[in-house]
Image (cartoon, rainbow, N blue to C red; front, top):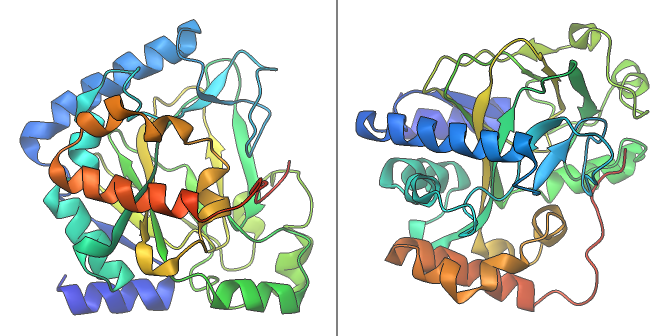
Length: 291
């Protein structure tokens, strides 16, 4: 797909699926890094995790089972493959294209890992990442119109059919029926009951980029191994518009010299832009959504 048509498809539908953003020589190192991170999380050694029973941050420690590993670029985790891939040219080139910015405008943000829980299945409710489910139609229209400075993606290392989206919903408020199915904290018994819902299936190595304010939900099958790289990147021209959505995950560790020193030059510049955004935010940013 050519770059102009890629951008057009993303703007129109709210998502695009791409192959080839992991170089063949990087696939095995990333897979091995994921396996080690998952093992440390499940053993309780790595405390930064997404906890079964909690859909959004703060995740707490109430359930021993996990559906995600947080902060995979953290120097304490010691897995250099993650930062190397996050700053790789194929990935940043596509992110800049979809954001309609220069690579010099890209801002480092979140990088986490989505995994299958072990003890029981889990699901996320229908939501937009930075628009509350109980938002009025007017509030929804205003929020959707302002969301242009970030990109989110899932890259699957194993076949992944967890994500459900409603294409084109990043531009328009919910219908009455869609609203009735996305107002509560309860996950759907069948995500395809949502009008317009589409199930995203990724083959190993495929990536889905999506506007994080598209309507989406997810199901987590405890019997299907999952290791999906889940990350966001911003456009510095958005100023502090993405501060709450990003900083709610707790990124103070990114200011540590050890993290900066472990990055390549591109990564250091991307990190600097994030730190500058943090400096421009006064007080507690709060949380985008609550369970």
